[in-house]
Length: 194
View (spheres, rainbow, N blue to C red):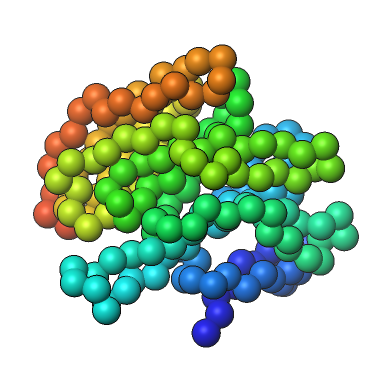
């Protein structure tokens, strides 16, 4: 079984698939990079539930790929394997960062390295992590404030978390939780700053 990333072209309101790339796990989220000159780069968060372990565990990956110049092929450039990724979001600060809501009940931020050839790769280790206590099975969704200083995160336990990003000359120096509350008794599948 193979899930695919789809790159879709819109022309005269007709939608067609222009490129696909098989992913080894269920693709849960795809996000194109907002940085100028890197709009052809996208991130893909994947996870798969492993019921053979008790309790069941979500393993996964966070990968980067780019659409080739002809717009006909997706090429994976790097991936971080291990923890299931249920949501991801680009963050533009003094450096290009990619954040992920994970099955480890935390939010992680990875530095993205820009290549001279227009590609991008992920750092293998997160440069910042914010644990989300009492999150249930996983963090589900995240969104950044317009000034990129705060993150909102939801969980399977219906909790919402707020965090603040510390900055340093190296990109990010920390992600600290500032508040959390029980929003409801359902899983939080989406969150957004106004």
